[in-house]
Image (cartoon, rainbow, N blue to C red; front, side, top):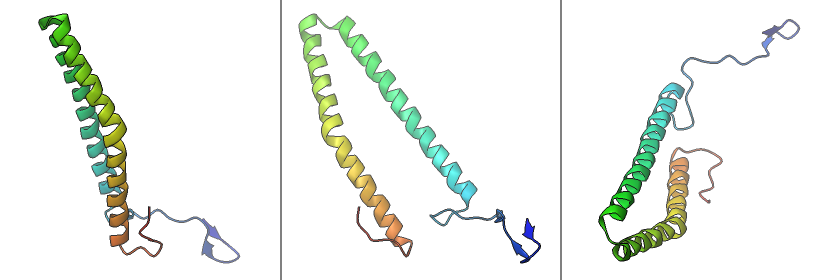
Length: 113
């Protein structure tokens, strides 16, 4: 819409070739994000299903004493991965994102987390 007094366009027009922050076209960036999220969701779901199937099979095949060792090992590994690995993964993700942000020569990049 144009203001008749100043002849200035008061509403910004959406350009067809707009780019996202990473320099890719917006549509391409959204598609790559959706594909990555889809792969991650399938991976997480399949991990849960295979874990359930493994423990269900182990509970039917093994005697109670052997299954208790397997379930204890599984529980310990789950706690270790949840408590130790995830914070490290988040730190590495943030550091990678920060270094990518700084490499695009943005004026507000400070390089800190």
